[in-house]
Length: 379
Image (tube, rainbow, N blue to C red; front, side, top):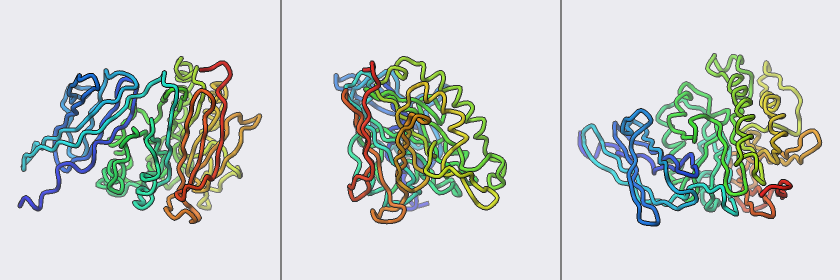
């Protein structure tokens, strides 16, 4: 085979995922069997390299490489780059450009979180969102990255190199699993391309004054629906998350946060909560099963806001006596700002005085805005 016919060894930038106060994980695509490591440099001149996985093996793979960094100082900017070595002919090495990553800081006075959703492999929308979204402590990609996984070759260009842009530049990435992200013959492989702090599809982040829980709402129909062909088990996963919610909301850094938000793909509330007729191609516009499983724990924790997608129709449902948390739902996959399912993105910015939540479309128009006061006695 000629050199011109060989695919590039590395097929994506190193994507920063699963940020923590002491580190993060880098994930990047490769075209053939390779080994990888991550080199890092701290501002004080300290430097190092990481490569081994939890089983003592050097990171290696045919489609994706992943390296977890630990032991870094909280809230510190660290320069990182990925080094990839092919282990099959033609032998070559690829070294990525340096990029700067800041670890999370529980004690930071401010926090900025950006949220995307329902991009559905639309390159024009992804490029527009990337251009519109500023640097942030965390970028939450709130589900439905894809339509369904009918081709295993689509994972890298969808998750790690969407529209050819480095989505994690200046904003570490948290991927929330949406209902379309669990569809298709190859959906079970998504976990190979998505890193989370504890290796589960739900987690908790504390960024300065904000605690953000990420939850997996599963599908928009019951597990037994014939369209799933026995491939899903979300009833058990919702129950698992219900137990975890009791544990995580008791952790001091989560229990004491001045602001408390939840990100999940399918809303927990909606404007019309009529039961879906699944036999007539109906589906859930909101996840009653998730709400029934999690509502009490979220209320006891003091959740102030749930941020979701799924409906492709922006909405803001204020908190009520029955539902003390507001529900914000963002837009759809269309890059045209005046389209029926136009994309929108959410920015959450917090300091000691307030948490400001703004939903904007791609014409920079504010669609919804919410200001939350810190929980009394916190911060």
